[in-house]
Length: 601
Image 1 (cartoon, one colour):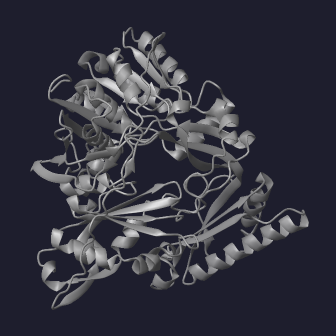
Image 2: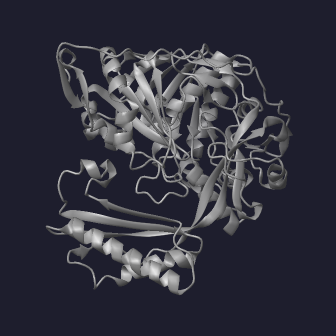
């Protein structure tokens, strides 16, 4: 149903910068929704775009949005009246809008492009530094202003709605929360007000589910084998949002993938912390009582989101130059490949450190050696047997590019001195790259000036809502310790679905019971001692682990703090965003009532 009725349809065409180019056309031509959102931004992406803008003031936005998502589809967008909302503006939304307008003019179309700006804090760095801001998770001091590459607050949805109210066909924002792209469409279509917190929470959850594109329709799904043959043509998600804030997730007819309670539940818990306090600019959401219902083939009804308050500050993230990093990958095979790879890695680091000492340079600030193929991600205690094929990934951080280059040179120079079995397919030697570390903090809404511009006209934007403050939620009861006459130890994957993701240096793992009766066994099996045994080799010393019940969907959410080696913008790890952590957990065994296993695969 078109906007203005009781339901609007919002398609999610992009979950990151680099998502499939055909997604926009799929949604437009198979099942044209009222709105299509394109999400491009992550902390890593902001760092990349900041570097691009530093090289060329005309860059700093997701160029693929213009060249691949929009240019081939603008005529169809105009014909079907579909409205586009995207954060492709990155750190330079006006430049993105200008490039779009050039394409629209070239095609002789009359689509109106609006921008939402004000998220960029680069001109306020002195003010922020003088305010005594510290990193909100680690307490670290504010970095030197001259080292900062980008600084942006996460804006909310009401400026997007204002742009749509003014007649924009395409809305381009800078940094905003991913879910705000869809919530802005809902506010525009239904006239939701800042104090209607439950409605805002429902629209936010709809945006959260579709913001990662096909991760809601079978991508990254625990039971991927069920749909492996159809993933090549996976459908991108559509949220059919009702005026009451409930919504149904579906996908275009005839496309691959799957929309089920499990695929939606996995995405619902993806990259969140406390499910009773998911903080967004417009509303603090409580997802703990959300329910999911399969109402048809590839149709899941989502309802029960609640709003608990409105924050008085925006979350802000800046990226800053914190030295250099670099690494290289070498492969070995043979009956003693694991030992050979370890010997080679040790020798490369020893040589490089000798070079640094002779030059009077400091040591590396961080070193990572991962022997992939040896089950190194599972931890040393869980390795089954020596591997005969190994990928040695060696990476370092250093205060200078030359320090990183020393490791890259010395590792390559060992090529003829290495143990046997060294091989690989590679191009030129890698180069050091700058570390753009992440620094997160809170910044008062009153110190941010949001602007909406459509064509050459600036539109007044209401001051962002502040309050009511969120009262601490009542703690949810945790599942009681279960008992059974006979128990079995089985892999978690037999009992649950799971998905993991990242927020800065923290990783989360959402775990959903395949049957409600299994949840108490899962909760008690995934206790802190078991989690530390599984993930201890990733955790920084003394790092806390948080566990949250999510009773509405028979699930729990696990947050591993300080688990990613600094997070995606600075980590040396093979998995700097914890994307495989759920797979590590699903492979572990827990105790369960044997009578509950009947009928489970």
